[in-house]
Image (cartoon, rainbow, N blue to C red; front, side, top):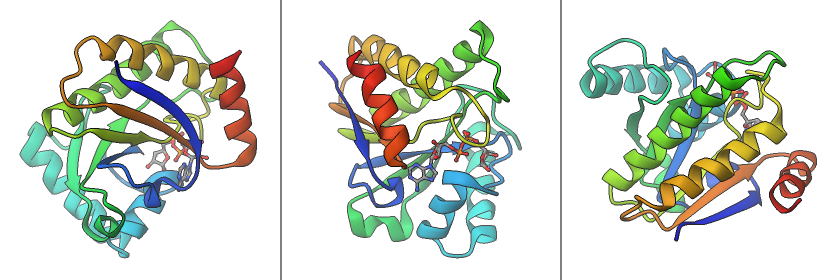
Length: 182
Ligand code: AR6
């Protein structure tokens, strides 16, 4: 059984073997958690974007990714906290609107990262609340979707044992806990 836990913190310093980035389809890490990861991993955000795009060409053979497709970059400076990989995945843009299509895209984004972590032989993986920031999806729905996808993934997981959903603010952390427990 895969253990799912909601924690409060900064994902760039969270000691999981893999952390996930809430990226856009071109891996242009311009803001939000993507910018924070780029800053923490390399310092120079443009250099991190270059590394990510090169990895995207090598791993998916395109200059963009679809929901469910993921790209892995090494953790670089994040290795000091035990992080080995950054898995870039792309959630849906909601702009406040939530429907079945958004949910399916988010499911794919989460599952793609979980499967990649399993393939990499990772035991612990930490996610930010994908799409719940700049992309404007309701946090409650994002948390519900995480819970469901991790449950489903539990049945196929080989190496992944723990999945953390890392919330940045106290308010979002409390809200997420309510969804999980309520
Ligand atoms: N640790 C954990 N969570 C964080 C951190 C952090 N250091 N920083 C922010 N968050 P967002 P999205 C939370 O906007 O909605 C970027 O420009 C944040 O509070 O980062 O998927 C990409 O390049 C929110 O709850 O991702 C894309 O263009 C959550 O992380 C676009 O934003 C996700 O917020 C993706 O938008």
